[in-house]
Structures are given as structure tokens and as C-alpha cells.
Length: 305
Image (cartoon, rainbow, N blue to C red; front, side, top):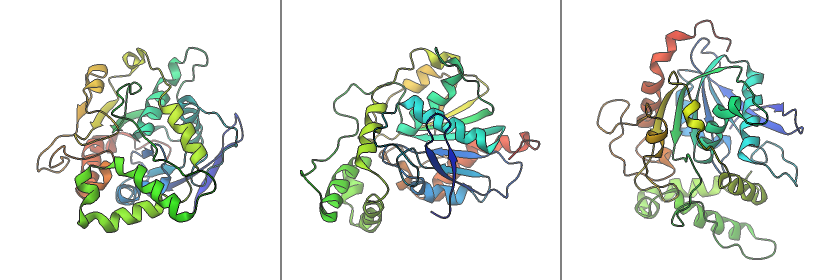
């Protein structure tokens, strides 16, 4: 990614690194990408660079990842990550925005929406969230042992770069389905993804992310969500990390799945894995997001961007 800015989280001084792409599109609904476990802001590049041709796009690094700071003894929870995002969005001053959360990022997005109903520290949001994309994510912790992020075995002691690369590759394989992962046509892309995964992703932070993503409780908070907020759910039948379920449609009855078909805004089929961005082509997913967000463009001409 390019040059980045930072903000300081008031609670503990953590520095969050972020970029706003497409900032020249004043008056257009911004889209915020919230990454999952192990992610850095550059992982959205296939989509963020294209979406930014039409609207402002925010990408950022969670605490302890990429160019964001983190204390060595930081024991954070999903709420911590949601309040990080709260402070980042507050600093930008946007009054209306859309959120796209992937995997752990989808959990963070839900927690952000629930901050006004926090039992101990209720925090009203100083902005309106008009659209939410929940992609390859959860409404409750996974209890099925067949799913979830599983780390590849790590040799003891200091690791060579080649050993780190092997661990990254073995762990990353679950982001895809075996056919995609082993397809020779995808090997060059796979090698780029593995190489990118070698940097800016400290293992101690990833361990904390996994703990956070398996210890959260939203109880009945989905009943608090406003029907004025539109929800789109992206889930793949070949996801090896998140079960293909109807949870969100039961909890958020007005949520809708991405449609399958041949029209703009639809995907060819649902046979894709956890890292959905790497399936089909970037234009397909760009159209999915833009069609979903399109109706908001005329509604915020007076918003502060």
C-alpha cells in the first residue's frame, strides 16, 4: 500500500495506521473495509483500488498488525477492536458510511453497531451506518471442531524465513478450497499471497485475535439493529473456516444474501471459499458491492467527508 496516516486511540495510546482512497469523491457514501484475522490493509487491494474509483474507501490495520502499534502485553477483545474502529471513524468525521467486515472483521463490525447498547459503557455512534456487508463471518462463536482457524505446527526455537513461509502456506490453505489451492492456474497468485503473508503479521497478535474471535457474546443484541440499515451477507459453500449457515437471516430477517446469476451485482455461484475476494474476478465483486451501495449515493450530499 502507499503512504498512510495514523490516529491515536485515547484509551491506551495505540497508533492505528489507515488510508483513505478515493477521497476526491466528495458527497458519495464511503465504504470501510474491516479485515479479519492475520489481515493487513493491503489485503483489500483488489477491491479497494476499484471501489475507490467511485467513492471514498477506508482501509486500516488492526492494532498490532501492519503499521499499527500494539503493546507486547496487550490482551485485547473484540470490543477493543470495535472501539479502535469507533475512534478511527470518529476522527474522520464522516456522518454516514457503509461497512464491509470479513471474518473476524465482521464480528468487529457487529460489535461496533452494538456499542450504543453496551451494558457497562454504552457509546452512541456519531455517524449513521446505512449499509453493512457481512462476509464469511459469524454471529456467535464456532463450536463445531471442523471449522475455525487452525494454525499449522510451528517448529520450536527461532524460525528461518523458509520455515515461516511453510507455516504461512499451510495455515493459509484453509482460506481456500483444495481445488483452488492446488490448481496450477492459481499458483502464481498463491505465491504472491504467501509472500505477502510473511510481513507485518506478528504471531503473538494473531494468537490474541484468535482468542478474541472465539470469546464474544452478542446474546440478543441483533434485535436492537435498525431496519434502516441494509445488510448483505456473503458466504461460500466451500468455506473451510466458517460454516455455511442461515444464522444471519434468522437474526436479521431483512438481511439478504448476495444473489447468484449473470447480472451485475450477482456471483456466478456459491462455490467459493473463505477468501472470497480471490474467486471469480475483481469486477464481479466490485459490482456486487456497488449495486448494493448504489441507492445511497444521492442521499448524503450534505455529509461531511
